[in-house]
Length: 62
Image (cartoon, rainbow, N blue to C red):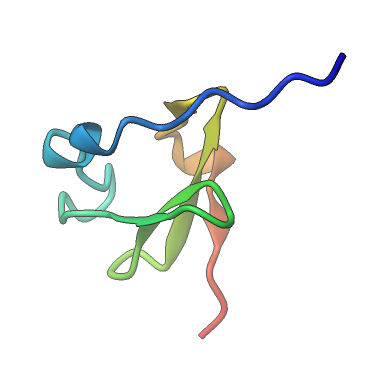
């Protein structure tokens, strides 16, 4: 049996902000990440839960 990942609830975007800049985030459904353009970081979403730790974020290319 294959498991599908838990879906991210887009309503969470209204409450979540970047932990570095405190700016709003953009949802990248394809990569399952929340993107902070100001901090140039992409925070992963695992099992439908955003991981808002800077140490877990992926640096964005310029």
